[in-house]
Length: 357
Ligand SMILES: [Zn+2]
Image: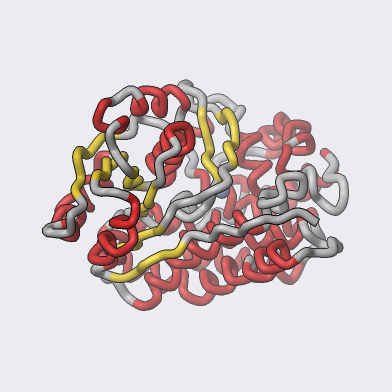
């Protein structure tokens, strides 16, 4: 038997979550550099600065991450003196800014803390970075051994973000449950894998229970209990699940038909620019459930999607069966389907797509 460690990022959540920064980040030095998105940094800047007043910890600069999560953007950041001199990195923003900051943290061996300013994905709490090419096409998944030292979720900032982000985050998050539960079906699970697989159910249940109200509260700019529950499901539960079920890289239960559909459709010209990841993945779960024969769950999710306005048909998505046909082979070969309990065939995909037309 080998020795191993499980590192799950701790978090602070609430309307004044940043007040806890000195307590956790102060352990790692005195100089932090912020790497983030433009809007995200504008939303968080004053609160970050005021939280660090008289703490002995200071922010040396606020640096724009770039335009996309790419190796090129990360290398450019690594060459900045202010990044070289920092003791730690504060990753502020949505998925792409945080993923870029993670690449910098990994290659420079500097600890990072994450500050999600939208509730749209689990980048802040996961140990994975999704890397794109400069032309916007998908390039690689980069797996880390360590994740953020702590995640700070300011619910006031999240409540004031455009609700489109939360909307997309809902689809990507409930997908975690559908994909993980199918990928791990029939497996004998060790402690941490079982934790991840069982916890994944909360990615779906929390959002089906609180998602609709959370969207309304987000639209009104109010940091309510429902919005906090939804944000925690999207950022924390999903991040923890994704780490636990992927820690053993030879048996990664993350991903499935919904993500394979998204990454495959991205090979169609213009698709990535006009479609949001979480919205496509949320729709992709309907395809997953039809292929998997989970009729009752399909009806339940379809009704939920309809209620909150997520797509329920290919038409809603602006694509046709022939578009799906073009990428069907690519879907069957996607690495997200490597650990599926059965082989997903082109015919299964097309049959489900015709039903979703
Ligand atoms: Zn996703």
